[in-house]
Structure formats: structure tokens, C-alpha cells
Length: 239
Image 1 (cartoon, rainbow, N blue to C red):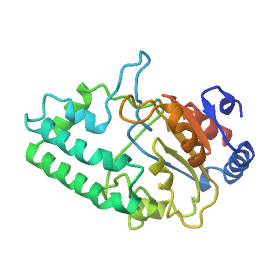
Image 2: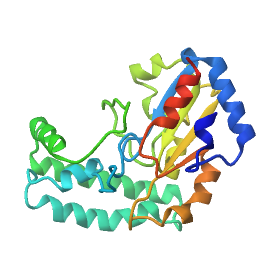
Image 3: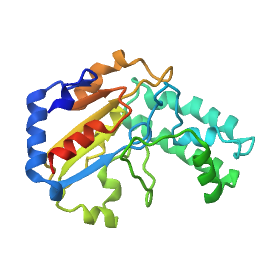
């Protein structure tokens, strides 16, 4: 597959990846579902000029429509909990309770902010957030955070019933925790994991320091790729 031979694409095990691709193609669309993270996976990290783009939380943090107390209180929570999220010294089970606390406190902060659906729409329209080309999204049902991203959280939803029989998966994510998003797929078939290794500035170690761990976790690693060209190329193989 030509796209996977580009300079910014890393495939640690070409034989395994080719086998997964052939199984996806053989199963076709009736057997396929796509499971994707949102921030900096479906959305872009920077634009063509290199300008940094907002994630979902960045839309709120940078909007003048939010009350004055929101940004400093949100930053206190970020400074407290984000080091926990990315700590290599804590287990996932040690992190989960603190991540739940973080989300609950942010939700309480949002409730005090008295924002409306109209104001959120305006914030998004005025932000610099950009979806990658060919992305469509929606939100409903249970809250999914960074450590419960798996299909067990949607087992009771109509969506899950509609996915019955679709046991081949193309998984898209930008963090190591995202590789678990397909856990819970009944009778899993071919699961192709595509990782977006983004340059996140000073928030995380640089790309070179994280490449090895991403190659271990994902079948295909896309280095600072702000497009959906790779997933779309794979889907087109199935036409």
C-alpha cells in the first residue's frame, strides 16, 4: 500500500499489518466499524502554517464568553491532574480515581459557569479548532474519559446493538491509552490500530522520545500527520 511507505509513516511489523489489511478487505464494510478518539485525532493539532489549534477544552479555556473565574480554576485542576494522567510511575488503576475526580470537578465548574448550548456553539464557531478533512462527529449517552475508552461503556446503547457482527475494527488514536478503545468488541476479528504521533509542544516529550512506545502499541504510526489520508486510503482499498 503506497501511503504506508511515506517518510512520516512507521510500520514496525509490515507482515502483521499486511495480514490485518487483507482481513479487513476480505470482511468488507458489513464487518467493519471505526473507533476513534476525538481531540487531536479527529481534530488537527496545528494548521498549515504551524499555528497551534485548540482541543475541546481549549475552546472553553480561550473563549471570552466564559466567566472570569473559569480559566484560573480550570488551570488549577489541569496543573493538579494532568501530571497524574501522563505519569509513567502510576498504574492505570491508580490514575482512574483521580481522573474521575478531575472530570467531576470540571463538570461542576461548567455547571457554575451557566453556559448554554447557544454559547457553546458560538465558542466553537469563534475558536480555531479544525476537524481533519472527512471527519463527522456527534456525542450522546455516557461520559467517556481517558481511562474507560472501551466498548464496555456502550454495551447498553442502541449503537452497540447496531454494531453486532461488525467485529473488524480500524482504531484511531493519538495517545497510548487509546489502544484500549476496542476492548469489549464481541468476538474480535482484525483490529488495525493507527496512532497519530502528534507534536504537542512542551506538554509531552518530543516525538523522537515517544516513537518507540508508539511503534510498540500501534500497527501504523503517523508522525505529525494532520490529515485523514491514511485511514481514507485503507477504506478505499475496501471499495
